[in-house]
Image (cartoon, rainbow, N blue to C red; front, side):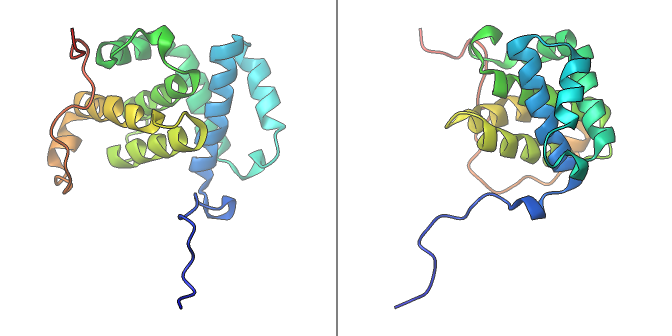
Length: 175
């Protein structure tokens, strides 16, 4: 008889999370408030900073994500929309906010490798989004990575796996 655990592995413990990961989580929650409630960014920011655990987050990265995503929302949606298989209005607000974070980091956080951006966004979608939302986020952001950071993506060694091409494309749905 073994003493091996029979439960699946759990998400990272709070103590294991980096300050930037925490910043992304708080930014996601703030962007959700913006998307759902159309609350003012300043009010959202003040509320979020009072949440438990915020002091452990990278507040500079949080500020950049929150205010950068809200300021660039229209431009980000223009990049995202052609890669969706449905209208933007039908995307859950969590996945929408995660996509904003991914686009923002691809464009403005060049110190963060594209695969780190992709992985962090997938983890956000797994933790906060719907059952398979992370797969959708992965498909869209993988295409955006190639579009927004073509040199970096082309230089990266291919991961071994079963990716056979873009996961999601507009117009690929069955007629």
